[in-house]
Image (tube, rainbow, N blue to C red; front, side, top):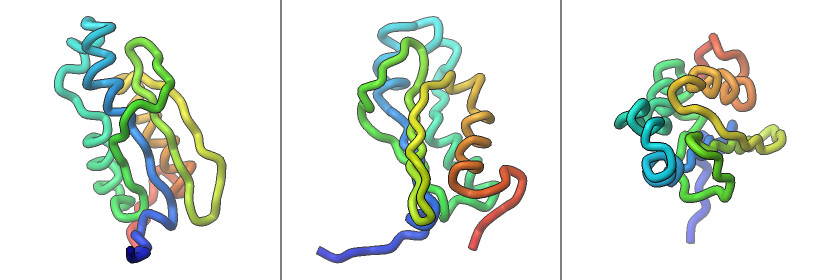
Length: 119
């Protein structure tokens, strides 16, 4: 076993419940699933972070069930590393609230939502 220090350990990670949008939303709320279509919140967030210069410092990761099941919403956890801070867990509409998610992630893990931070 070998320890590693990925760049994102400095800031943290964002866990996006894959089960919410791939299983629960289509099964429980087909109208929401139709509105979301094939949109993937983790992929969108990963791309958004990379474009803003945070791609190596903040990691967006799909995860299995986080045991917080809100009908028609996706569960997300922001897990800070390095300087610390409390884990934030919440549910959101993956389309309507995606920009608010991005801003919350940057404020929790990266600083200002308007500055790039690639080191």
